[in-house]
Image (spheres, rainbow, N blue to C red):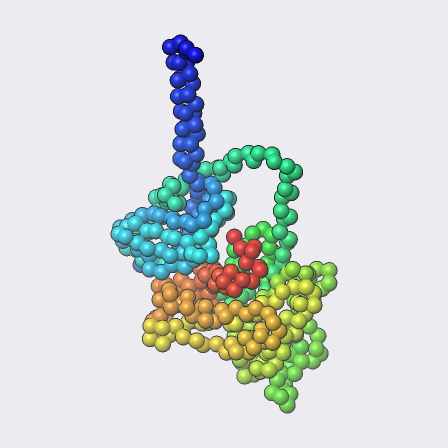
Length: 397
């Protein structure tokens, strides 16, 4: 069949237009990149050094691995980091996600922190790149429509609401002033809105004085334990046991004592067997209400042997033994906190807790935390939830 030149030209133009349109669509799709927002916050600054928290929000498509880049001003440098691997090449800094936080869903955030040094001023970075894309805000990408091939799949059921109940001492408690700040007060921001944290930790308490506030006497029995009379629970524990407003199925009870319990005098004194017994009382009560107990060894103070932070708490074995006997998880916060202190190079120090990196982490003692320190200890608990496969980890941001 003979085709006119005009018709051939029209057909050729149509093919070119279709190809150009397809190419344009492909090019636009390939050029799409995840938008992002970075919140960079200096948490403490002691003149020659500083601590910072960084939160990256993915405003684009999900990513399965991430790298955040920025440049420091002259005189700024990273010394230690947590929740990310941070490397430097001159002024260029690169942070890369770890195995447990490398995937970031659309609209989700990931956080990490670091300590650094500086000379002169300490400005925030001027810009950041997230997987090569300059961060400056944006809107989430709109997914392409899904072709209809049959009945639609119902959306997944929303996650159930969970309450996390905290019981412990001053290293966990909510602050009454600028310092000390317990790690429990920094725990809630690590979770999604489906989690409510109820912090009932109280400073100066052993496990027994926390449970039986005001009823632990100054007299020891024949076993060397402080006598309890009457054996009536404190209001904080009865509130947790309340059938209507206390622990419910699916909730968590996190228990951390062992710092004040070693006091030789009543009312705080608690012996080894009694300590394990009372951990059992609390864990079994939680289980009876369908809640999940998690036992935590006492967080370490900062004690140095030369340039190394070393162990300094008791009741470690008792906590582990109680957890094994009860069949519940145990988080070894004591060892995790020591590892953190060594990673941050808080040893050696001259005992001055008002200056330097150790002063930014601790109050003017060797035990209690500034806000920045408490936040990092809370991060250790969150990391343990993930690493140990404790289901509460599913609610972490």
